[in-house]
Structure formats: C-alpha cells, structure tokens
Image (cartoon, rainbow over all chains, first blue to last red; front, side):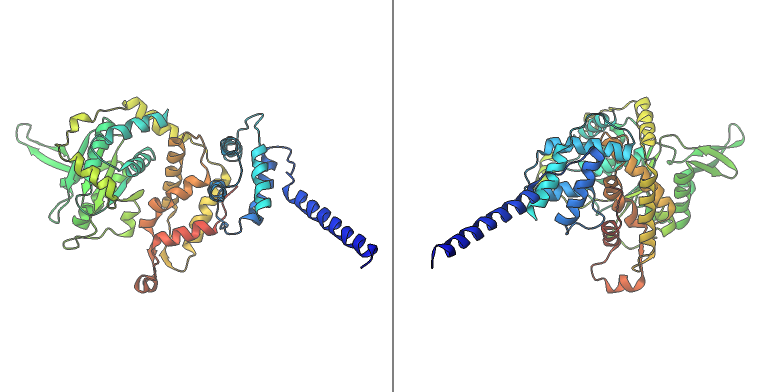
Length: 115
Length: 311
C-alpha cells in the first residue's frame, strides 16, 4: 500500500464525516415559522412523520401526551402557553398578541431528530 | 368564576362522599348543560348519597322517589284531588316539582309512569287533564338503573333512554379509596356538614356562561361527522340521534367552561362522547350475540380514532 491509497482512505473518511454532519444538521435544524398558526402547521407535518402510531382522530393534547411519554426535550410550560394561545385562536377566534412559539418548533425538531 | 364555584361544590360533596370527584363533576356538567342523568351501578355504591350532597351543596330542593311496579303516573307528576272545604278539585303537585329529583330504579316502574316522568323531563312542565304547570327551574332528574336486579323490571326503551343526557357508571372503588370509605363510615354521616355554596343568581350565571361558550362551525361539522360515522357503522342498529349530538355539544360546552375556557376544543367532545352516547346506541343482533368484546363504548372509541378533528 503506497501513500496514495492512504490519501484516498483519508479522503473517503473526510467525506463520510461531512456527509454525516450534513444529514445531522438537516435533521436537527429548527424550521422557521412566521406566526403561531404556521408553527403548528410545521409541527403537524412532523407529527405525521414522527408519530405514525397516532390515529387520524388525534388531538393536540394526544400529541403532547405521546411526546411526554417519549421524554422529548421540550420546555412543556412554555409549550403549554403556546398551545393555549393556539387553541384560543383556532377554536375561540381570538388572537393573543406576541405569543412565543419557539417551543412548538422545538418539539417539531425533536420529533424529526427522534425518528 | 365557574371553575371556582365547581371546586367549592366538590369540596362540599367530599365531606360526605369519598372518592367520587369525577362522577360529581359529570353530574355538575350535565346540570349546567340543562340535562338529566342516568346513574348506573350496583346498590350501595353511594349514588343516593352523592345526589343528596350535590343538591345540598347547590342549595336546591331535593326529592327522592323509589320507583315500584305498582306506581301510577299521578304518584310522580301529581293529580287533582277533591277539596271538601272548597267543594272543588285542586291540583296537588307530585314529587317531580323539585329542583333535583332522584328517581331510584326508574326501570322498575311501569311504562306509563316512566313515560310521565320522561315527558316532564323533556317539556319541563306537567299537564294533567288539560291543566299545565311548569316545573321549577333549574330542574334535573338523576335516574338510577340497577343492573343486577332483573325481576319486575321494565327496561327503558331507546326513545326514553335518549332523554337522559348522560349515563354515569358507578363502579367499585379501588382498594385505598374503599378503605377510606370504611374509615369515613366509622362515624355517622352528618349532612349538616354540607353547606350550600352557590347562590341562585350564581347558578343562573353559570348556566348562562355555559350557553355562551363559543363553538366554531368547524367543531359543529366535526360533531356531525362523528354522528354520521357512527350511524354508518355496520355494528350498530341504532346510532346517535340529532338530539344526542345536541346534548353532547352542550356537555362539551359545560366541560370547557369548567376548565376555564370560553370555547370548546375537540378534546371536550371526545371526553364526553362515551357518557353521552353509549347508552343510546344499539348493537345489531349478530354483534350482540357474538359478543367479541364489542359494546357501544368500543364503537364510540373506534369512531373517535377514525374521524379527524379540526387541528
């Protein structure tokens, strides 16, 4: 084995690491959402892929129960506030201004990562 | 406001009844939804005790009628009796003229009596020989059905079961709670401990608040889809009636209101579907005979899993 074989091996290893990092970065990237409604839209997409065992009749509360059971790293107090605000908007028709929805996207990311 | 009052009511009933918080909450929801309740459970499982404590904590008039096979409709709704002094007939009100009526073993009475009671429940008024008297408001009937005694029983037909908004099943308590029940009964139960904690105006406000609970058109659509899916289920001969869906809607509003929300969410409907619908559904003869672990509750649970709620 001459030095060129070693170089090829090193190259291959480097590319493997790069590919892994690229895939990892894609999986752990927090997606962007413009508002609360969009954030829950993002979460819904991830729920479909990440929680296939949930029946079509599931509600957001079922999602939370399942996510807690999986011990996903989410600040549930903050998520709860976002969900209350979303429910008020979705089912009550009134909007709370300035609701923080970061934890909704965190849950979406955690679901993607845990697949 | 409503959540605080419900906590006060639960605190009062807890003084004499051990471990029936969920059942108390369901009765309260049904009361706020202007419905009537069918309590099902073996004898001696604190159905009457809870009903009395509930009535007292609300500061309402409570009457109990033990239904028997030899009853007549006038034993419930009242009738005209001759007054010798006035030399005329006058209407004497029956026990149905109260705020909370415990109709014990309602299926022991003959069909005519059942139908007189159920008509009064529906119309909230009594008509005897052309004379109409309105019942007091609020008015709720807590009917009990005893599943282990079959002799001398006239089962309630589906049309009459449909008048009961909810069926609440009282099951045996877990070991720890049953031990607490025994402990509680070492001394005599004193109903004097239960105090009225709601004023009539607060009660009226609570009922109005429940009626104001918002329901989006999408939620109504979800409820209608559930009803249609159940009616289309091949395991059922009889699905939920439109009246059943209306009552489920009212109970969902009451649940939302007790949880401090001014709008209903799909979970409110899902949480109350079994209590409101299970006693009204009838399985087909084949499914009933085969058994296979199917009962109306299973059909409801399957439908809730299948029909997508607005998210």
